[in-house]
Length: 344
Image 1 (cartoon, rainbow, N blue to C red):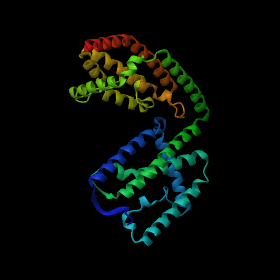
Image 2 (cartoon, rainbow, N blue to C red):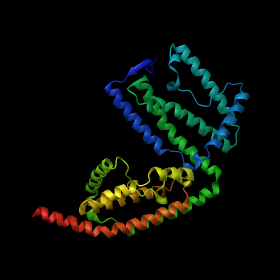
Image 3 (tube, one colour):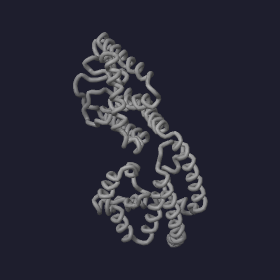
Image 4 (spheres, helix red, strand yellow):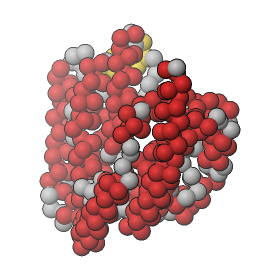
Protein backbone atom coordinates (compact mmCIF):
# COMPACT_ATOMS: atom_id res chain seq x y z
CA UNK A 1 0.00 0.00 0.00
CA UNK A 2 3.05 2.26 -0.06
CA UNK A 3 2.29 3.47 3.46
CA UNK A 4 -0.55 5.56 2.09
CA UNK A 5 -3.64 4.19 3.86
CA UNK A 6 -4.54 1.42 6.28
CA UNK A 7 -6.85 -1.43 5.34
CA UNK A 8 -8.36 -1.28 8.83
CA UNK A 9 -8.73 1.39 11.50
CA UNK A 10 -5.43 2.40 13.09
CA UNK A 11 -5.20 4.01 16.54
CA UNK A 12 -2.82 6.98 16.37
CA UNK A 13 0.30 6.88 18.51
CA UNK A 14 0.83 9.89 20.84
CA UNK A 15 3.29 11.39 18.34
CA UNK A 16 0.90 10.86 15.42
CA UNK A 17 -1.98 12.32 17.43
CA UNK A 18 -0.02 15.50 18.16
CA UNK A 19 0.91 15.85 14.49
CA UNK A 20 -2.69 15.29 13.42
CA UNK A 21 -3.83 18.04 15.78
CA UNK A 22 -1.23 20.38 14.27
CA UNK A 23 -2.43 19.55 10.74
CA UNK A 24 -6.01 20.20 11.87
CA UNK A 25 -5.14 23.62 13.29
CA UNK A 26 -3.18 24.55 10.17
CA UNK A 27 -6.13 23.55 7.99
CA UNK A 28 -8.55 25.66 10.06
CA UNK A 29 -6.28 28.69 9.63
CA UNK A 30 -5.98 27.99 5.90
CA UNK A 31 -9.76 27.77 5.49
CA UNK A 32 -10.25 30.99 7.43
CA UNK A 33 -7.64 32.91 5.41
CA UNK A 34 -9.27 31.83 2.13
CA UNK A 35 -12.91 32.03 3.20
CA UNK A 36 -15.60 32.51 0.57
CA UNK A 37 -16.76 36.14 0.20
CA UNK A 38 -20.25 36.68 1.57
CA UNK A 39 -21.36 38.20 -1.75
CA UNK A 40 -20.55 34.88 -3.45
CA UNK A 41 -22.31 32.81 -0.79
CA UNK A 42 -25.65 34.33 -1.79
CA UNK A 43 -25.11 33.25 -5.42
CA UNK A 44 -23.86 29.72 -4.74
CA UNK A 45 -27.04 28.03 -5.99
CA UNK A 46 -26.79 29.91 -9.28
CA UNK A 47 -23.11 29.05 -9.61
CA UNK A 48 -23.87 25.42 -8.82
CA UNK A 49 -26.54 25.37 -11.53
CA UNK A 50 -24.04 26.62 -14.10
CA UNK A 51 -21.43 24.04 -13.08
CA UNK A 52 -23.91 21.16 -13.04
CA UNK A 53 -25.28 22.07 -16.49
CA UNK A 54 -21.78 22.03 -17.98
CA UNK A 55 -20.88 18.77 -16.26
CA UNK A 56 -24.00 17.15 -17.76
CA UNK A 57 -23.03 18.49 -21.18
CA UNK A 58 -19.52 17.07 -20.81
CA UNK A 59 -20.99 13.79 -19.53
CA UNK A 60 -23.06 13.44 -22.71
CA UNK A 61 -20.22 14.50 -25.00
CA UNK A 62 -17.79 11.94 -23.58
CA UNK A 63 -20.43 9.24 -22.91
CA UNK A 64 -19.98 9.32 -19.15
CA UNK A 65 -16.18 9.23 -19.23
CA UNK A 66 -15.66 12.48 -17.28
CA UNK A 67 -14.41 13.33 -13.80
CA UNK A 68 -14.54 16.88 -12.42
CA UNK A 69 -11.60 16.56 -10.00
CA UNK A 70 -8.07 15.29 -10.70
CA UNK A 71 -6.80 12.03 -9.27
CA UNK A 72 -3.77 11.90 -6.98
CA UNK A 73 -2.11 9.27 -4.83
CA UNK A 74 -3.87 10.52 -1.69
CA UNK A 75 -7.34 10.10 -3.22
CA UNK A 76 -6.96 6.50 -4.41
CA UNK A 77 -9.25 4.29 -2.25
CA UNK A 78 -7.67 1.59 -0.11
CA UNK A 79 -9.21 -1.23 -2.15
CA UNK A 80 -7.28 0.00 -5.24
CA UNK A 81 -3.92 0.51 -3.51
CA UNK A 82 -2.67 -3.04 -4.10
CA UNK A 83 -1.48 -4.71 -6.23
CA UNK A 84 0.41 -1.97 -8.07
CA UNK A 85 -1.13 -2.88 -11.45
CA UNK A 86 -4.66 -2.34 -10.06
CA UNK A 87 -3.60 0.97 -8.56
CA UNK A 88 -2.12 2.13 -11.87
CA UNK A 89 -5.22 1.04 -13.79
CA UNK A 90 -7.43 3.06 -11.42
CA UNK A 91 -5.17 6.08 -11.74
CA UNK A 92 -4.99 5.95 -15.55
CA UNK A 93 -8.76 5.60 -15.93
CA UNK A 94 -9.67 8.58 -13.78
CA UNK A 95 -6.78 10.71 -15.05
CA UNK A 96 -8.13 10.18 -18.57
CA UNK A 97 -11.68 11.04 -17.48
CA UNK A 98 -10.47 14.25 -15.83
CA UNK A 99 -8.54 15.11 -18.97
CA UNK A 100 -11.80 14.85 -20.94
CA UNK A 101 -13.47 17.27 -18.55
CA UNK A 102 -10.56 19.72 -18.82
CA UNK A 103 -10.79 19.57 -22.62
CA UNK A 104 -14.48 20.44 -22.38
CA UNK A 105 -13.80 23.37 -20.02
CA UNK A 106 -11.34 24.87 -22.52
CA UNK A 107 -14.25 25.49 -24.89
CA UNK A 108 -16.17 27.64 -22.37
CA UNK A 109 -16.29 31.45 -22.14
CA UNK A 110 -14.18 32.95 -19.30
CA UNK A 111 -17.03 33.39 -16.80
CA UNK A 112 -18.41 29.84 -17.14
CA UNK A 113 -14.85 28.46 -17.13
CA UNK A 114 -14.12 30.25 -13.84
CA UNK A 115 -17.35 28.95 -12.24
CA UNK A 116 -16.76 25.33 -13.30
CA UNK A 117 -13.08 25.41 -12.31
CA UNK A 118 -14.08 26.88 -8.95
CA UNK A 119 -16.53 24.06 -8.23
CA UNK A 120 -14.04 21.41 -9.34
CA UNK A 121 -11.39 22.84 -7.06
CA UNK A 122 -13.88 23.28 -4.21
CA UNK A 123 -14.91 19.61 -4.51
CA UNK A 124 -11.28 18.47 -4.59
CA UNK A 125 -10.51 20.47 -1.44
CA UNK A 126 -13.52 18.95 0.33
CA UNK A 127 -12.29 15.44 -0.50
CA UNK A 128 -8.70 16.15 0.51
CA UNK A 129 -9.52 17.65 3.90
CA UNK A 130 -12.12 15.16 5.17
CA UNK A 131 -9.73 12.83 7.08
CA UNK A 132 -7.80 15.81 8.51
CA UNK A 133 -10.97 17.42 9.86
CA UNK A 134 -12.15 14.06 11.26
CA UNK A 135 -10.05 14.41 14.38
CA UNK A 136 -10.73 11.05 16.02
CA UNK A 137 -8.04 8.92 17.74
CA UNK A 138 -8.50 6.13 15.17
CA UNK A 139 -8.18 6.61 11.41
CA UNK A 140 -7.80 4.65 8.19
CA UNK A 141 -5.23 7.15 6.93
CA UNK A 142 -1.48 6.99 7.54
CA UNK A 143 0.54 10.07 8.40
CA UNK A 144 2.14 9.85 4.94
CA UNK A 145 -1.33 10.16 3.42
CA UNK A 146 -2.40 13.01 5.71
CA UNK A 147 0.83 14.93 5.14
CA UNK A 148 0.39 14.50 1.39
CA UNK A 149 -3.17 15.82 1.58
CA UNK A 150 -2.01 18.84 3.57
CA UNK A 151 0.68 19.54 0.98
CA UNK A 152 -2.01 19.80 -1.71
CA UNK A 153 -4.29 21.88 0.52
CA UNK A 154 -1.53 24.44 1.08
CA UNK A 155 -1.14 24.79 -2.68
CA UNK A 156 -4.80 24.70 -3.67
CA UNK A 157 -6.52 26.99 -1.16
CA UNK A 158 -4.74 30.12 -2.46
CA UNK A 159 -5.79 29.06 -5.97
CA UNK A 160 -9.39 28.86 -4.77
CA UNK A 161 -9.08 32.41 -3.44
CA UNK A 162 -7.78 33.62 -6.82
CA UNK A 163 -10.80 32.06 -8.54
CA UNK A 164 -13.19 33.73 -6.09
CA UNK A 165 -11.75 37.14 -6.87
CA UNK A 166 -11.66 36.36 -10.59
CA UNK A 167 -15.38 35.53 -10.57
CA UNK A 168 -16.17 38.75 -8.70
CA UNK A 169 -14.09 40.74 -11.18
CA UNK A 170 -15.80 39.11 -14.18
CA UNK A 171 -19.22 39.91 -12.71
CA UNK A 172 -18.59 43.62 -12.15
CA UNK A 173 -15.24 44.82 -13.56
CA UNK A 174 -16.04 48.56 -13.59
CA UNK A 175 -17.55 48.70 -10.10
CA UNK A 176 -14.60 46.68 -8.80
CA UNK A 177 -12.16 49.35 -10.01
CA UNK A 178 -14.25 52.13 -8.49
CA UNK A 179 -14.51 50.17 -5.26
CA UNK A 180 -10.75 49.71 -5.17
CA UNK A 181 -10.05 53.42 -5.63
CA UNK A 182 -12.48 54.50 -2.92
CA UNK A 183 -11.17 51.87 -0.54
CA UNK A 184 -7.65 53.24 -1.01
CA UNK A 185 -8.97 56.66 -0.01
CA UNK A 186 -10.51 55.15 3.14
CA UNK A 187 -7.20 53.46 3.93
CA UNK A 188 -5.40 56.81 3.58
CA UNK A 189 -7.95 58.42 5.91
CA UNK A 190 -7.41 55.66 8.47
CA UNK A 191 -3.64 56.20 8.32
CA UNK A 192 -4.13 59.91 9.00
CA UNK A 193 -6.44 59.18 11.94
CA UNK A 194 -3.84 56.94 13.55
CA UNK A 195 -1.21 59.64 13.14
CA UNK A 196 -3.58 62.16 14.71
CA UNK A 197 -4.37 59.93 17.71
CA UNK A 198 -1.23 57.85 18.43
CA UNK A 199 -0.93 55.57 21.45
CA UNK A 200 1.34 57.32 24.00
CA UNK A 201 4.81 55.75 24.43
CA UNK A 202 4.15 54.97 28.12
CA UNK A 203 1.03 52.95 27.31
CA UNK A 204 2.66 51.33 24.29
CA UNK A 205 5.43 50.01 26.55
CA UNK A 206 2.84 48.37 28.81
CA UNK A 207 0.47 46.99 26.15
CA UNK A 208 1.58 43.38 26.69
CA UNK A 209 0.82 43.67 30.41
CA UNK A 210 -2.51 45.31 29.71
CA UNK A 211 -3.45 42.52 27.29
CA UNK A 212 -2.78 39.99 30.05
CA UNK A 213 -4.98 41.95 32.46
CA UNK A 214 -7.80 42.03 29.89
CA UNK A 215 -7.41 38.28 29.32
CA UNK A 216 -7.61 37.56 33.06
CA UNK A 217 -10.78 39.63 33.49
CA UNK A 218 -12.25 38.21 30.28
CA UNK A 219 -11.83 34.67 31.58
CA UNK A 220 -13.51 35.61 34.87
CA UNK A 221 -16.42 37.29 33.07
CA UNK A 222 -16.72 34.31 30.72
CA UNK A 223 -17.15 31.99 33.68
CA UNK A 224 -19.54 34.35 35.50
CA UNK A 225 -21.84 34.72 32.48
CA UNK A 226 -21.44 31.13 31.24
CA UNK A 227 -19.73 32.21 28.04
CA UNK A 228 -22.38 34.75 27.05
CA UNK A 229 -20.10 37.80 26.77
CA UNK A 230 -18.81 39.82 23.85
CA UNK A 231 -16.07 42.43 23.72
CA UNK A 232 -17.78 44.24 20.85
CA UNK A 233 -21.21 45.91 20.72
CA UNK A 234 -22.84 43.26 18.54
CA UNK A 235 -25.91 45.36 17.77
CA UNK A 236 -23.86 48.08 16.06
CA UNK A 237 -23.93 47.74 12.28
CA UNK A 238 -20.21 48.51 12.03
CA UNK A 239 -19.38 45.29 13.89
CA UNK A 240 -21.68 42.95 11.98
CA UNK A 241 -19.96 39.94 10.37
CA UNK A 242 -19.63 40.11 6.63
CA UNK A 243 -22.37 37.53 6.04
CA UNK A 244 -24.91 39.84 7.74
CA UNK A 245 -24.23 42.68 5.30
CA UNK A 246 -25.83 40.84 2.39
CA UNK A 247 -28.69 39.04 4.12
CA UNK A 248 -31.33 40.47 6.47
CA UNK A 249 -32.12 36.94 7.62
CA UNK A 250 -28.50 36.32 8.65
CA UNK A 251 -28.41 39.71 10.36
CA UNK A 252 -31.50 39.02 12.47
CA UNK A 253 -30.24 35.54 13.42
CA UNK A 254 -26.93 37.03 14.55
CA UNK A 255 -28.55 39.83 16.57
CA UNK A 256 -30.93 37.40 18.27
CA UNK A 257 -28.14 34.96 19.14
CA UNK A 258 -25.80 37.53 20.70
CA UNK A 259 -28.36 39.90 22.21
CA UNK A 260 -27.13 41.22 25.57
CA UNK A 261 -23.70 39.59 25.43
CA UNK A 262 -21.80 42.88 25.17
CA UNK A 263 -23.87 44.41 27.98
CA UNK A 264 -22.90 41.47 30.19
CA UNK A 265 -19.22 42.22 29.67
CA UNK A 266 -19.73 45.96 30.23
CA UNK A 267 -21.58 45.23 33.47
CA UNK A 268 -18.67 43.08 34.60
CA UNK A 269 -16.14 45.83 33.78
CA UNK A 270 -18.16 48.47 35.63
CA UNK A 271 -17.85 46.44 38.85
CA UNK A 272 -14.02 46.30 38.68
CA UNK A 273 -11.60 48.47 40.70
CA UNK A 274 -10.70 51.69 38.92
CA UNK A 275 -7.32 50.53 37.55
CA UNK A 276 -8.63 47.28 36.07
CA UNK A 277 -11.67 49.09 34.71
CA UNK A 278 -9.58 51.73 32.91
CA UNK A 279 -7.09 49.23 31.50
CA UNK A 280 -9.76 46.77 30.33
CA UNK A 281 -11.86 49.57 28.84
CA UNK A 282 -8.83 50.90 26.99
CA UNK A 283 -7.79 47.48 25.70
CA UNK A 284 -11.39 46.83 24.67
CA UNK A 285 -11.16 49.93 22.46
CA UNK A 286 -7.84 48.65 21.04
CA UNK A 287 -9.46 45.33 20.14
CA UNK A 288 -12.47 47.03 18.56
CA UNK A 289 -10.30 49.34 16.46
CA UNK A 290 -8.32 46.30 15.29
CA UNK A 291 -11.48 44.47 14.23
CA UNK A 292 -13.02 47.51 12.55
CA UNK A 293 -9.95 48.33 10.49
CA UNK A 294 -9.38 44.83 9.04
CA UNK A 295 -11.35 45.28 5.78
CA UNK A 296 -10.10 48.87 5.41
CA UNK A 297 -6.45 47.87 5.77
CA UNK A 298 -6.97 44.94 3.35
CA UNK A 299 -6.90 47.17 0.26
CA UNK A 300 -5.25 44.66 -2.09
CA UNK A 301 -8.12 42.20 -2.30
CA UNK A 302 -10.85 42.86 -4.86
CA UNK A 303 -13.53 41.53 -2.56
CA UNK A 304 -16.46 44.02 -2.77
CA UNK A 305 -16.99 45.14 0.82
CA UNK A 306 -19.91 47.59 0.89
CA UNK A 307 -18.32 51.04 0.88
CA UNK A 308 -21.09 52.40 3.09
CA UNK A 309 -20.13 49.87 5.76
CA UNK A 310 -16.43 50.74 5.44
CA UNK A 311 -17.21 54.44 5.84
CA UNK A 312 -19.21 53.71 9.00
CA UNK A 313 -16.33 51.63 10.32
CA UNK A 314 -13.97 54.58 9.78
CA UNK A 315 -16.36 56.89 11.63
CA UNK A 316 -16.53 54.45 14.54
CA UNK A 317 -12.73 54.18 14.61
CA UNK A 318 -12.55 57.98 14.80
CA UNK A 319 -14.95 57.93 17.77
CA UNK A 320 -13.06 55.13 19.57
CA UNK A 321 -9.65 56.78 19.12
CA UNK A 322 -11.05 59.96 20.69
CA UNK A 323 -12.48 57.94 23.60
CA UNK A 324 -9.07 56.34 24.11
CA UNK A 325 -7.49 59.79 24.27
CA UNK A 326 -9.90 60.78 27.05
CA UNK A 327 -8.81 58.00 29.41
CA UNK A 328 -5.10 57.84 28.55
CA UNK A 329 -4.07 60.64 30.97
CA UNK A 330 -5.81 58.94 33.92
CA UNK A 331 -4.24 55.57 33.11
CA UNK A 332 -0.76 57.09 32.87
CA UNK A 333 -1.23 59.11 36.08
CA UNK A 334 -2.58 56.11 37.98
CA UNK A 335 0.15 53.79 36.76
CA UNK A 336 2.91 56.25 37.64
CA UNK A 337 1.48 56.85 41.11
CA UNK A 338 1.36 53.09 41.71
CA UNK A 339 4.96 52.81 40.53
CA UNK A 340 6.08 55.56 42.95
CA UNK A 341 4.16 53.93 45.83
CA UNK A 342 5.75 50.55 45.13
CA UNK A 343 9.24 52.12 45.15
CA UNK A 344 8.58 53.74 48.52
